[in-house]
Structures are given as C-alpha cells and as structure tokens.
Length: 340
Image 1 (cartoon, rainbow, N blue to C red):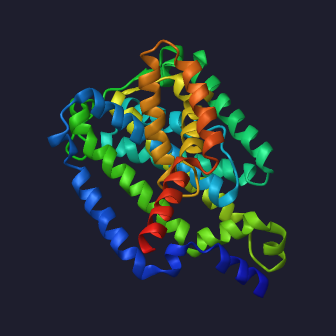
Image 2: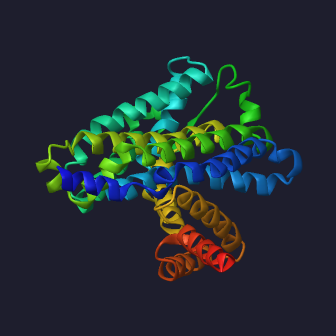
C-alpha cells in the first residue's frame, strides 16, 4: 500500500504541490476567460472569427480525447461517435419530441453520456489497441444506423437531418446561433468550462489514481484499488466532453449528417491532439487551432491532403511532446536564463 501511495504522490502534478504559485495563473485565466467573451467587439472579421470558432469546437473534442489518453493511456479512434450522436440527438429531440433548444441540448448530452457509460462498461476492459478499434467500430456502426432507410424519418438517411429549433438557447435564437459574432460567447464559455473541468479532474485524486493505474495496474489492484470503475468514469467523462463539441456543431449549423460519424471527423480531433500534445490541458486546444489554421491555408493552395500530411509528420517528429510541450520547454529555458 505504501508503494502505491508513493506512486500516487509521484504522479501528482506540480501545480497541486505548489498551490500558492497557481493563484496568479488562475487569476490570469479568469481575466482571459472574461475578456474573451468580448472578442467579437474588437475582432470584426467574420471569416476569421468563424475559423476561430471551428478551431475551438475542434479543440473541445481534442481536449476530451487528450484527457483520456494522458490519464488512462487509451486512444479513442471512434471520436466521431460522440460528435455525431449528440448532434443527431439535438435534432431528434427538437423535431420528434418537440423539445425547446435548451431541453434538446440537455437531452443530447444526457443521452450520449448514458450511451458512453454503457459502452465504457465493455470497452475499458480491453487493452489499448483493441480499445481503439472497438471505439472505431462503434462509430462506424452508428454511421450505418443513421443511413438505414428505416431510420430516415429520424435521421434523414443519406441526406442528413436539417434542424428547426423551438424557442431560444441562453437568449440566442436559431438565426443568432448561426452567426459567428453571436455564437462566439457560447462557444468560448463552453471551451472555458471544458478546460476548467479537465484541469480540476486531472489535479484531483481521481486523476492521480488514473495515472497510477496506467503506470502499474496490477500493483494498484493488489493494493486494494478498484481499477475498473475509475476508467469507466474517465471514458464517460471524456465522451461527455467530446459530446459538447457535437452539440455546439449542431447548434451552429442546425444540421447533422452521416459525415459527422465518419472516421475523418474524429481523425481531425485525433491529429489536433497529437499536434498539440496531451500532457497539458491547453495542448489539444493549441493543436486544434494550428490544425484549423493549416487546413484553411493549405486548402487555398489546392494541395490540402499533401501539405496537411507533411505538416503533421513534421510536427510530430520535430516536437514529440507536441506544440505545447515545445512552448513550455521554451518558457522554461527563458525563465532559467532570466534567473541567471
């Protein structure tokens, strides 16, 4: 037991040990979170604002799968399952159940989280590679279900599901949700909430148990720790975070299609997470912003796939710990020189 306690202590992040040092960082984060709400007032270019929103929504999904990978060592290839499923549930709740936007969003988040919990009961028992393939199979299964002719009244089949919302969501009508400037506060606050939740969980004892289990699961079991239910909870939480991205996508576009359940959709989030790095909560977000900017820049050249592939390979090879790992390392060097 003492060895495991030592393992838990060794996995505790530095911020948990040096709590007083974190106060200025938290204060800066709070100021940035509040100031960010008013960005559309000074940044009026709708194209770049829309691109930034796309990057943030992708970042929400990337943060979710980055949390699961860093805490549990599990890579979710079927990310698209929890992007497309809540998007469809928003539309089904609104069209078929007659729910208002707020109730439809709640229905989508609760429904996808319950589905994730049921799936997690099975898949977290698998080793990392089978786990990745099982989640990929899950996404493909959902895609085929959405495309079934018998499901067309609910999902729209191959044509997708066009949504018509009732009422407003946090004071925003359907028309306002489709505009970048008015949609921005919702996307920004959702991102801030996701980042805060992941940071709190990662720095709590729950996060320490997950990392210790990943380091030596057998020793944790022999020491009396339950290693199964924490991983189920982690998978459910990660899926919930990804579902937030799916709900934001549905609210902004008012449309859900089988492409949301395709591997390519989840692949964007996976690549963003790898580019940014999963060891820091801001890493996947940085990777998502870089990836979104790269897609826009490379798309204008006509060689989108080629240049994206080259850029991703370069980033992963040049920065094994991700772009955020490089940034933190650079900041550490600058601090060291400043002290000298």
